Length: 177
Image (tube, rainbow, N blue to C red; front, side, top):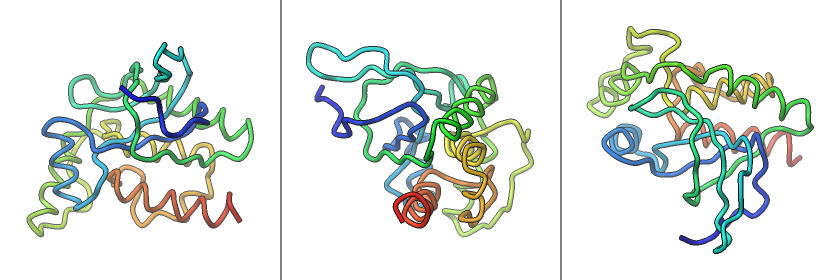
């Protein structure tokens, strides 16, 4: 395993990758996106002998819903939306608040339906059931309420690729500028 290519990851940063298993594949295929999964970094636990970072993250997955997870895998993309310690703390607080939420299989069904040209605004599902991008979008909006202005869809109707595009636009317009 190689060290992270993003050496300055900090708590509150958002990571993206292709995802794994059938849910990652369905999300990428259904949305025609490079990203099938995203998460929020919480605490750097250790730096291993080979330089790999061991992080405590919060992420949503099909097996357990929203959980804390130990992650060493290198992300494909990292985005930081917080500009100060207060925004950072709000993102982490909202991310932690969602721990224990069920996985949003209805949202996966909506994404798959979209792949076949069927538009569904929101699948009838428990509103507290979330996929990874719903969790991350809600946490990002808690830390940066103005981020919501950059979204084409509600936080509970975003997939990882759409979230990455929205976050990039937000960062370029507000944080970088």
